[in-house]
Image (cartoon, rainbow, N blue to C red; front, side, top):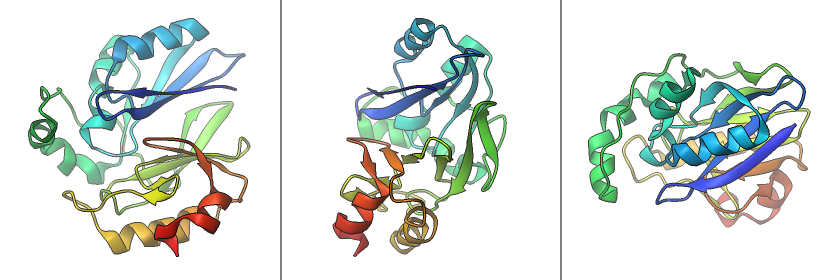
Length: 208
């Protein structure tokens, strides 16, 4: 498995590339910005992009998805419940003081339990509403890897004071859907350092 995570955009969203060494196929998760960098990393690994998955509809995670689709032809997957976030893209851009990116309805809605990704490294979609109503996480079971979007962070949880946020809902999502995963599961959050389920279960002050 080829796996690389790097920050993109002014809010340093963690964008991830998952690739297969044999088929040379890849998926990209949360291409918020810096599309030339993402394309360069795909080319560096000799990968062909087959799928783009967005964990939720905030500008720092979805802002570059349409550009990446146009550059590669890969479809975009995002949960349909975050269409309301795409409708607020102008407001989101104004909050950050940046130009409003062009966005579009996803090609496929990433629903709970759906299997996404590439053939040899597929992930299960876990619906985790709370940060937004359409927030999802991606669980790569054999790799013991979770792409958590902005639901769970190292020592923290996603903010819930923006449109679509719900503090009780995010805690329920984390406790019922994420903390039940094996403790050794590595967690790649939407921002900041990686962690593990065990570490957050034992030490995250927001989850006590």
